Length: 165
Figure 1 (cartoon, helix red, strand yellow):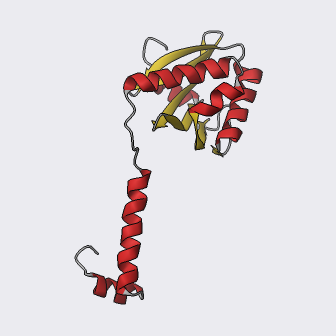
Figure 2: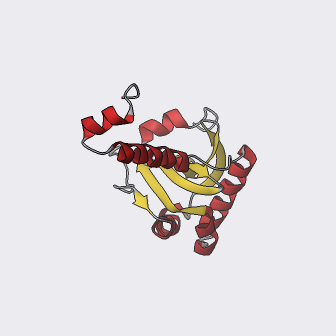
Figure 3: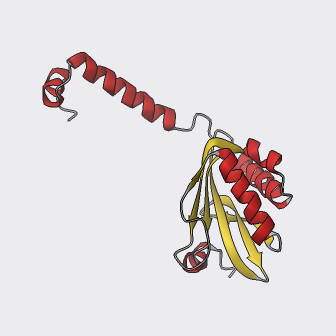
């Protein structure tokens, strides 16, 4: 496709040459817009993760919301073996409320610890010495863009550092 000029592309797709140039321009802009504008240092990631943990542990919805991107997504991997969200959740308020419910119902008796997962800050929740879940984050422009909660016991064995298992 990249070997064709705009006139040839326009004939193939049935659009004008000018329209093809505009589509390419918009596509490139869309790709650029999806990239993080400001790199987040490891220290900033740790600080945001710690603030997240503090807000969740305290049941502080108003403390959690400013940490989340407006279009944050929460993913849960249960592997069909444990209880977890069946579908991804989207949006800061929906995700924050879900996290508050999880904290109050299931994680209020857990021990939460900041850990490293694949070189990134994460949180390990344990109940009675057994690992319950591990949460990792994608942080973009100082906001949590996505949250991944691993509950699948088979994956937890592979995810947790050997000192935790």
